[in-house]
Image 1: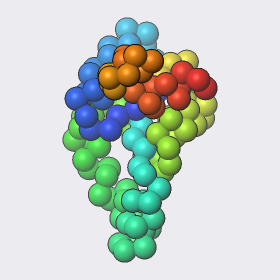
Image 2: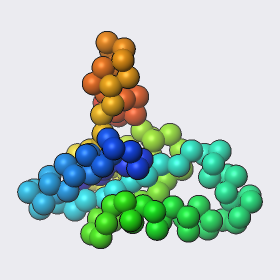
Image 3: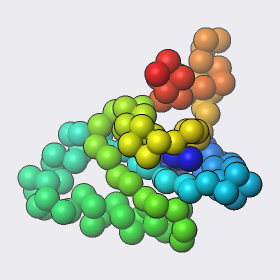
Amino acid sequence: IVCGVDFSDHSTRALAWARLLADRLARPLVVVHAVEPLLAEAARVTYGREALDEAIAPELRAFVGEGPELQVGVGDPARVLHGAALAKGAAMIVVGTQGLGRASRMWFGSTTMRLLRE
């Protein structure tokens, strides 16, 4: 099971569901966070290659807690999550939903919609 998180309330709820599903199905859980490419490049240029991982890893571990495998990817969140799911052979991707106000996207955020199209 792959779960995408972005430190929001929506991803907190998604993580809770992913943990429950992983426990009930006795499957491993991989938690994935996607970083914007521009931010990743700025961190690399300014602070060095490992700066991004050194900055995000402790925050991600604090957000997630002990247990799940953590991955940080650079790029569009839907693509990062889809790639992680393919690489891990995941049968399920869990992400938060977010109503955006438009009828066609009332229940799902844009990352969720892109994942559903994949």
